[in-house]
Length: 243
Image 1 (cartoon, helix red, strand yellow):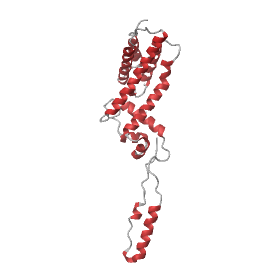
Image 2: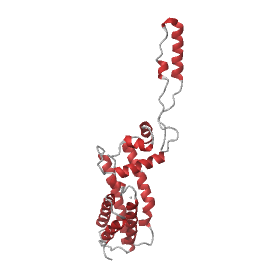
Image 3: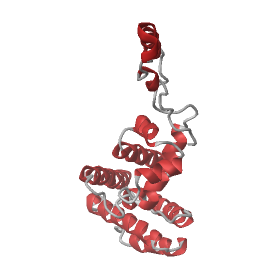
Image 4: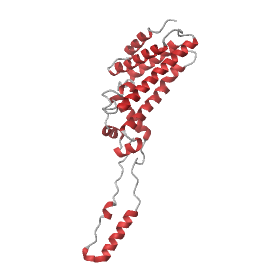
């Protein structure tokens, strides 16, 4: 299984429109003030939103790592804007709400995970059990090597709760179900290729393995090293159905 910019500039023209005529100069002064106000109103204002130089990709990477390490609820918008180096209006303009920023960060995490590990299960000519063994070794090494000990974001993001964002719990659950479905599909492929017994319960085995990976994420956050994590996974693979 993470931006430096300037704050948006406020318009400085409102004071011109509020000017009042000097009583000592009569109608001519009033007309001049009116003309000045009209010119101020006609002057185009600098649009608000993302400041020049805003790095959306780097902002998303920073947000992903914060949500991954601390969880959704424990990561405030003020902390996000401080870490990214951007004013809140600019962050909202770029991503929408905090929920939307979290979704984008989660999608980034999933894409990085697929690039890093997706090919292991899909590798041709590899028995299913060996494919899972290689995937689990890579996960154990990655979880232990992470400086922040964040584990899997699909699990870690719920650390500390999701507050009122119950819909995000459903979305995270759907992503975890997707991982389980991918495990099931790989086991079923092994059945078709003859290296997994035809009578094995692919759905039950996939659920068991995905549950082990989720638990592994918690163990990593608690400080287990790579050797300890690998031993957990080797133990889990002993439940693999005999051919």
